[in-house]
Length: 498
Image 1 (cartoon, rainbow, N blue to C red):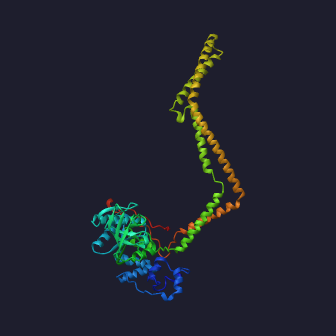
Image 2 (cartoon, rainbow, N blue to C red):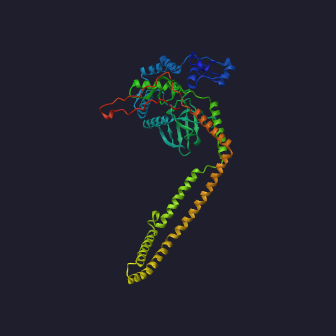
C-alpha cells in the first residue's frame, strides 16, 4: 500500500478489489489517499492477490488532454489550466446569468451536432438554474410532448424530459443518480415511465417522483457524475476545488469546457488556477458519523443538565416590567382622559370636572377675600353653594365614566403584581441552586466549550494553498458606451469557507 503522504509523488498505478476496477489515480484525486485504518486498506492487505493494475486512462481521446488531467490530479494546476486555456476550453463570462446562457447555447449546439453533452456545476443552486434554463430550451425546441404531470414539490414532467433519481427505487428497481428519459406520464395517477440509457424501463409512482426522489437530469452536480462518461462536458466553475474539478473535467471523451467569471481569458485562467489549487479532502463516512454521534451526546448531556436548573426568567422579568410600566401609564391617562382615553367619554367628563373645579375655587377665593364688601361676600357665599353642587355632580359623572375601566385596570395590576412575585421566587430559587451546585455550572461550561469545538472541527475553514498566490482583484474593461460596460466581478476571497 502507498502511504498517504507519498501518494502524490509516485507513479499512477490503478487498483480495485473484486467488485470492480476503479482507476486509482482517479479515486485518489476524488477522495484522497487511503489512510491507515481505512476499510480498503484492510482488504488490500488481507487479499493482495485481488489487486489489479490499470495503467492507462482510456476515457479521453486526446492524449494531450489526458496529460492535462494528470497534471490537474497531481497538483500542477498552472500547467493544466494553461493547456485548457490554449485549447479554447476556458470561457470567461461577466456574470453567472451570462455563464448559464453561454453554457445552454453550447450544450444545445452539441445536441444539434449529434453529440452527447452534459451540464455540470458544484453547487445545487447553480444546478437548479442550469436545469430550468435547459428544460426551457428543451420545451421551446419541441422535444417535450404530451400532457404535463405536476409532481409533489412542484416539478413538472412531460414525455421527453431528462431526469435523474435522487433516491433509490423500491426493492432496488433503480439506484440513486440513475439517469433516464421520460417516455410517458399519467397526471391523474401521478405516475410516469422512463427509460434508462441501457434500455430498462422504470415505472415510477407518486412516492417516487416527489422533489426528494426525482429531479431534472439536464444538469447535475459533480458529486453525482462520478463514473459517468459523456462526449462533451460544460462545467460551471463555482468553487469546487481540485477534487471536484478533476471529476468534472474528466467525464468527457471529446472535450471539457470550464466557464468562470472574468472579463478576459487571462484573468479567467488566474481565477481557475486559484479555484483548482484548493483541496477539499472528504472525511471517511465513519469519521463523520462518529463526530455527529459525539456532538449529539454532548448536546443531550448539556440539555439535561441545563434542564435540571430552575429556569432563567430574566427575559420574562423584563417583559412583565414593560407591561407594568405601560399599565401605570394607562391608569394615569385614565384619570386625566389622555392617551387612549382621549377620544372616549372619559375626556369630556374630565374636562367638565376641571371646569367645575376651577369655577368653585374662584368663588371660594372671592368669599375669602377681605378687601371685598360685606354684601359682595354674602352673594359669593350663595354662589359657592351652587358651585359646590355643580362640582359634586361633575365628580360623580367622572367617577361613573371611569369606574368600569378602573376596575379592569385594577385587575390587570393585580395579575402583574402576582406574576412579578412568582418570577422573583423563581429567580431566587435559581440563584440559590447555582450557588449550592458550583460543580454543575462548571460541567455545563465544559460541555458548551466541547460542543463549540466539535462544531468548529466539523466546519473548519479550509487552509489557503501556498503553491499559487491569490490572484489580484479582477479589473474591468470599461467602454465609452454604458450599454457595453461589464458588471463588476466579485474579488477573489482570501479565506474561503467550506
